[in-house]
Length: 362
Ligand code: NAI
Image (cartoon, rainbow, N blue to C red):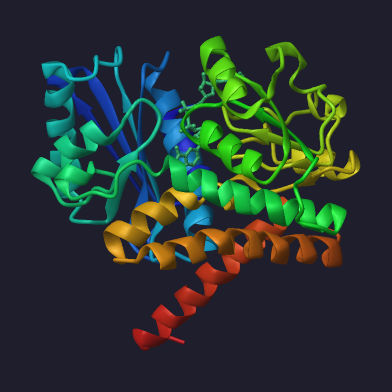
């Protein structure tokens, strides 16, 4: 597919493309929607086989951010950026600093239409560098006035989401004795394991880094499952907290769980996989709803000035949002993914109507 046909098939507002010759990097910024506020979403840095793959990621991921921000009820629209680099520069290197200073100038030139944050292969230190040149950045370190790592609160949100999902299926939020398979015990998964353990869940973990799996398992008395056996592991809750695309035509028939509820982004390989889960009798907590704790953390602390109590109640509300979606999905015989998208679109349409009225159009 050419650049033109990729863009023609996209329903967003604006894409900015910069070919940054000195750093040999393609910079893509996707502003999918600014109806609810500035387009906010992370910057992914990756060596793509072809820059077009970076553009494809920006288009797809910025659209998903619009839905995520809307369902989380934050004053942000959806955006995403990609730095398609020849190779990821090492952390702390001059080359990396130069790249992020140049990239910050690009974000600054957009005047706040796009607000960035960390994503795959980018982190707090990079956000600090961006913050030296422009204010449109969330997720800087605490020393630089940011809210720090959002992962612990992402885990808290996923935990509340699991409680709501379990409640909908089993009629009780009690996790004592419930079995949970956590795939990936990195920043989010390892914190989630601790929260589940405190509530008496029986936990199994898996990670491509054996040391991480072992450390989490020893901490909470969990069992470690071979990577090849994660999908077939019998459990009440399967919690993907590693990579995307884990729910597909191949994996869904092999799942032995009642519920899928985890942090990983883009869990469904295709939209049709939401229907496959329904057919398999598995309740799916849409990924961008249950993992919104990260954006809630950033927007709540850095933009909206929330207290810890306000943050705790908004993270808990992720469970209420899911419950509402599960009820809609059941009542209307649609997938939970469709119910989530419907909620997001309703919020965006209502904001668009309000804006039109303010501008004198009706
Ligand atoms: P992380 O990189 O800290 O942890 C991911 C873990 O998964 C690592 O320990 C890695 O070794 C492991 N892993 C990778 N592939 C695996 C596989 N095939 N099987 C088992 N383990 C595997 O990432 P983090 O921050 O914990 O995020 C986890 C997921 O949640 C990602 O998909 C991320 O996009 C998503 N997410 C994270 C947020 C955050 O605040 N950190 C916010 C929203 C979503």
